[in-house]
Amino acid sequence: MADSIAREVPRRRTFAIIAHPDAGKTTLTEKLLLFGGAIQLAGEVKAKKDKIQTRSDWMKIERERGISVVTSVMTFEYGDHIFNLLDTPGHEDFADDTYRTLSAVDSAVMVIDAAKGIEPRTLKLFEVCRLRDIPIVTFVNKMDREARDPFDILDEIEQKLALDTAPITWPIGSGKNFSGTFHLADSAVRGSDSEEHRTKVNGARSDLVAGRLPENEREAFAEGLELAQEACRPFDLAAFREGHLTPVFWGSALRNFGVRDLIEALGDVGPAPRAQEADTRKVEATEEKMTSFVFKIQANMDPNHRDRIAFVRVCSGTLERGMKAKLVRTGKPMSLSAPQFFFARSRITADEAYAGDVVGIPNHGTLRIGDTLTEGEELLFRGVPNFAPEILRRVRLGDAMKAKKLKEALQQMAEEGVVQLFSPEDGSPAIVGVVGALQLDVLKERLAAEYQLPVDFEVARFSVCRWISADSRMELQRFIESHRGDIARDLDEDPVFLAQHEFSLNYEAERWKDIRFAAIKDYQ
Ligand code: GDP
Image 1 (cartoon, helix red, strand yellow):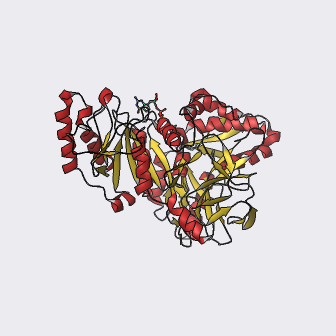
Image 2: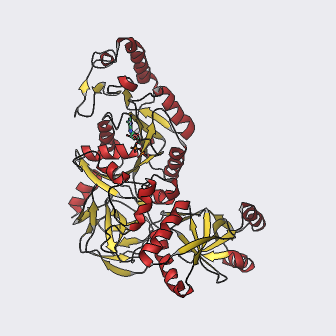
Image 3: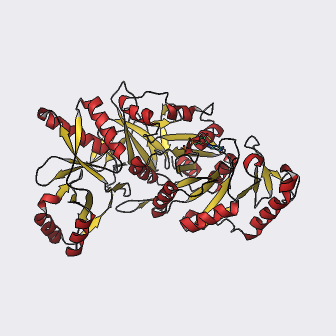
């Protein structure tokens, strides 16, 4: 068993793609899966995104708005490696879902549109990765269209993200003349991705490099490439792994350029599953005992069964089908009878999963986001964050008889991470909080479809929410007592302070110096 762990863990690469909408995340995903043999035909991911499937009623929202609401995981193999690609929703209203997913990856691919450079969502997502020191590989996409000068793009990454860049490849031409990539350190060239291997060449001016371009472009290109070879920072593995430097690749996901460069680099230098910080200690990926945590819950994957799939990231050991695990939050045993692996379109039963793998565990509400599973050890993983909601609403229910049912339904939705739920200390009706307005639409739709609860939302008198804590329990208690009408408890019974607006929050923070007001809470 220990042998299989030592063999399997270093092969795993678990990553996500971060990008501003339209930069080409879906197209790149599709191509990665295609080269990885996970799908036969490019176009399947796109088709799913566009419309075809009707997995459940609430996904109508996704179809109508043409956005991808659901986070999923796709596993594929390339060379000696097994890749777990965690997909994230493109729409920023589901940002907290994306942030939770980023807590389960070891690296991220940042896709940049070659004409647009760093866009606002790219920046935001990058910042989340930086908070967690997630190593970033950059893919400059759409080189087949009018693109900015490569030096310009590198400069922008360095300036806007304060991140060192090391181009690994260099684009041969751009726009309609884009005709391949040149590997700077190896002095080797690859035309399109249909070439499995690179061809060694003798410098920039070789026929196989500059010779691919129209005559009047060759000299300027060769000079640029030589400058890149001399002036650009060389790749530094340690700096990359620490999140200070990004290797940069160029290509066109649509036209099949540069995708192999990227996937090979993820295999060669991308980090294997890392050690994970828990409350009592750090857990190494190659330890024998299984540990894992839930970062995502997805309901209604199968409309015929009202099932809930908890996505767990394995952190160590072997997660085996049929094993008994301990759910640390409750201390109860849980039988993992049907863990599943996911591919682009299908899922199969997972017999064994190792650190870095993501498996789906069907359950009926036993698991919630942030939960830790172990083989018995009392240990809790930290780091699946909760973000202070930016929109707070009271749920209005037409039929008062159904108040109890609503309470249960909201509790479920909150455990799945659809919304956050706050119960005011003064006993007034619950408040739901979301980061983006579309989450409210999803909540409304699901309450109607799954619980036959038609609801509306009322503006609450609060607009800001912060988790409160203090070194002194007495001081915290004193604050709570003197603000009882503005205090609520979250799902874990942790207290939050609700303020009418930013101004009143600042006012209280000034007066109560020993109270911490946190906008992010890590699940424990
Ligand atoms: P996402 O929103 O980031 O998932 O972006 P998509 O993958 O859906 O791509 C957005 C649009 O850009 C689509 O029309 C794609 O066909 C197009 N696109 C993606 N990659 C490329 C590329 O390399 N070159 C060109 N010309 N178009 C691309």
